[in-house]
Amino acid sequence: MPDAVPIALDRTVTGPLYQQIVARLRAAIATGRLAPASRLPASRVLATQLGVARGTIETAYALLAGEGTIVARGAGGTVVAHELAGRTAALMRPEIAPRGAPLRGIEPIHPFRLGLPALDAFPRTLWARLAAREAKAMPTSDLSLPDPMGCAALREAVATHLGLSRGIVCDPAQVLVTGGFQGGLALIARALLHTGDLVWMEDPGYHLARDGLRDAGACPIPVPVDAEGLCVADGVAVAPTARLAVVTPTHQSALGVALSLSRRLALLAWASEHDGWIVEDDYDGELRYAGPPLPALKSLDRSERVIYAGSFSKVLFPGLRLGYLVLPAGLVDRFAAASHLLQGGQAELSQRVVAAFMREGHFARHLRRMRALYARRRAALAAALEDAFGARIAITLQGGGMHLLARFALDMDDTELAARAMRAGLVPTSLSQLCVRPRRDQALLLSFTNVAADQAPSLARRLAEALLE
Image (cartoon, rainbow, N blue to C red; front, side, top):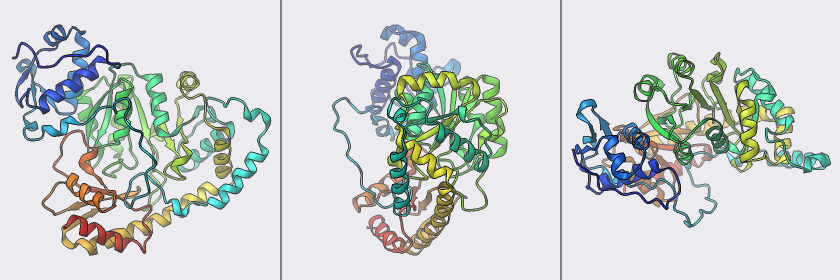
């Protein structure tokens, strides 16, 4: 065992020290100063070397072990993972953008880009009429500070809709309107988490959620996903005392699978037994093409451990920046205080327009139209890709969602495939980009929502030309 590791801390840098230790150890491994299979000091020894608390080292080690960078072997000590040989460059990803980095401008709608609904099919004329009407009818009181919990009309509309479509019985007082999913996650971190708290995250999964929680001082622990969704037993084995689990049970955010009933029950049992919380990110649960939408995990929650997170970004348009949380009754006061501190409420007019859109039946009709449209666009893109690639492509179509998963019989990894596509003006996402731990299964995620059926053949040919060059 080495007497010391080749890292030092910069006490002038803001943020939790364990994050800096994680970054320094990753860099030491990536540059070869710590080779695969080399043994790390015990947490007590490294704490003494760096002049920090032992718990700080244990938190850093837990994060690195969770992502597979190091391996704890009991009496054999902690070692750098053998599997990193030849793959250490992947560790050099930046954790947080440096201060002073240039801000990114608004990105154009490139073909296959994830996360965007069909913007060409949004009922803009109807929306403009509702917006004008609601603006004219706004009382003077609505020009004052907004309610930190959200507009009463929108909270009532959300509660009614969820009861009808997602099987969630809740009082409007439990609904908190947020600045999209990321805004809701920031409130959750503020209200429930302390620095160093462990959080289960799906692997592969939504990278912005993982990065946001890490930035809030939490310690994300990657938990693998298979054909039945989150591997709950793996999460229990690695981090049974985690404070939080963030899951996408209806349509897993990368692989598209649904969390099986047995694992839903196991996840709820874990939360109840260990005083943990579950964040159900139901980002596209309304968009199902085979049968009715699956019930929400929240509808099975009898112990009040699930925080349901919904968003209007995927079903209306992301420029709204509106989402919502359905809170267990015992958390309402705590979240109201956090919302007052962090966001102070959302724009009243936008909330009133969404409330009217829902209350008058336009929202339900829009969802029905989008399900039919997306089913056609998905089928058209899948057929066009199979025509363009032939036997060199295998497409996975799950029951719902906004993207399809394509695996290619080509002699290059998915990150190179994505890079080639990007050079051709196409923006698929590589599955590897969404993974913390390396996985043999590689693919491209291709959004079909903004690909009109008559455009699918030409876009599929463009992709084939880019990947087969």
